[in-house]
Image (cartoon, rainbow, N blue to C red):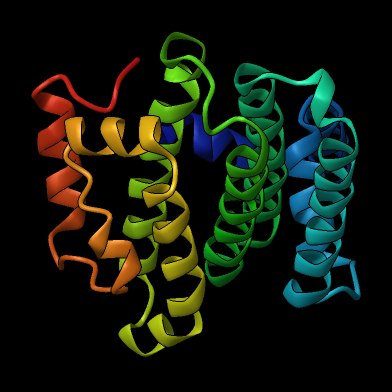
Length: 212
């Protein structure tokens, strides 16, 4: 939303008391903005503190998934993974922690891929299709995020990228979906992400790939 100059000037003319009342009324309707402002203006927590807290929340979810996998399916596992990724998105929205975004998204991917590999790798193709496409899409997202960081930081994620790539290669249905959607798993295994990975992803989407 954009605001014209007349409206901006009217806001500037409000008294401090009127502005305070208006701000608090607006904040009541936007919990996310409240959390963001609290972190920036009042919290003593660092990005690293919040990152650790987010990881602990995700770890609890993963622990539950591991304990009750027999009641799950590839579809349910995908929904749980979406919830875990939602925790990451909330963390980044509040803290603007770009390094933490990559770190946590890789953590989510690797842990849920391991559960998938352990218990659902031989699921019928139809039941696993949505999960497989979702994982391929997430792999592209992670590589795009990694490329946005300083190149010296790639070494921090090399081992995890390799682990993700090897897990991909151990799940036949997932490898089939990866090949179909233009994902070269060697990019992960070798931690050699193309410089133009964002363009590659965009072109694939325009051609109708990376979709269920």
